[in-house]
Amino acid sequence: MIDFLNLQKSNARYNNELIKAAVRVIESGWYISGTELNAFEESFAKYCNVKHAIGVANGLDALTLTLKAWQELGKVKRNDEVLVPANTYIASILAISEAGLKPVLVEPDESSYNLSIENIKSQITANTRVILPVHLYGLISPMDEIMNFARDNNLLVLEDSAQAHGASINGRKAGSWGDAAGFSFYPGKNLGALGDAGAITTNDTELADTVSYLRNYGSKVKYKHDFKGVNSRLDEIQAAFLNVKLNYLDEDIRIRRNIANRYLKEIKNELIILPTITCEEHHVWHLFVIRTKNRDALQRYLTDNDIQTVIHYPTPPHRQLAYKELKELSFPLSEELHREVISIPMDPTLTEEQVSYVIDVLNKFDC
Ligand SMILES: *Cc1c(COP(=O)(O)O)cnc(C)c1O
Image (cartoon, rainbow, N blue to C red; front, side):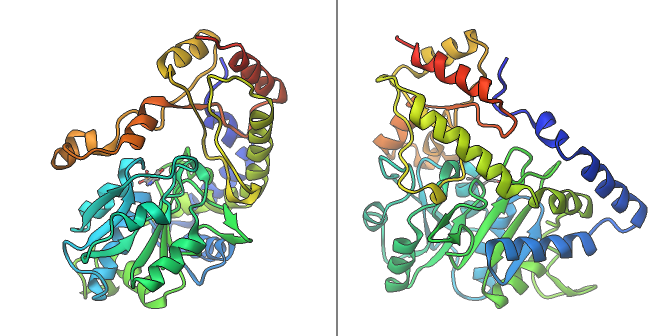
């Protein structure tokens, strides 16, 4: 069986260093908000080329706490509208709801599956305050255009960078374009912890401070609480693992790009639509997502040929029970994408032979 993503194999590459990191934390006697987190925040901010990175418990909280901090700072008010792609993973939308704001879904661009200015414009109202572009599957959104549009219209931009660590436009990385960005280090992400973890990146010191209080019971000074905060801290042991794995992120991105380039060049089947990409640096290939009319047949065929696949995602957020208030809305392109997409193996530990096998099997698909 060719795994879609084998985390055991992937992390085994760093076994010695991960074990050393774990032992270091265990023996330190200090498990929350210590030197490992400080070191990771500093290195990750440097990696993204921003002033601040603030570690939190997961990617959902990274987005939610940023939106809450903007409310504490008077930049956003309750029930303001946040534009978000209709085809995103539901967490982007849940963060908006959790922060007491109103998600306004926007159809993605047909070829990038990300937001486009044209589609953003069609959903702007007097209540729009924030644009939340999602760099879906690892492809950075057109951030130069989105930032220009946001400046002209006095909107804030929160990048959902959960799938796009290291993607860039003209050398400027995801997480450094928006007013702030949320990252996830869920184990399966391109930079993954060995449990839950997340971070916010920003150049805005006031926002960074506010988020750092909110994640810790709204407290600046122990037992003094200026905000109604939450407990959303990034554990020392996870920070220690991330300190190891961040050193290998660029190498992993290089390997992912090599696999993606082979898929793009060598998969030749008119029943299959490949991802479109204009520039190598834009994409870090968190997922390699193809489209086909007969998706379920393709998935069965690949399973029969020992190739594991995953659907990202089977049900559009506006068709989920959680968002029954949106169920009358229609997003034809998003709905079509949810019917047609399928993600094929994308794992830095795939061998050349395994990649060749996946390509060969896909090229023989004919129903
Ligand atoms: C994974 C993910 C999140 C949520 O991150 P968690 O760490 O799982 O909370 C948010 N948005 C997108 C696009 C994601 O892929």
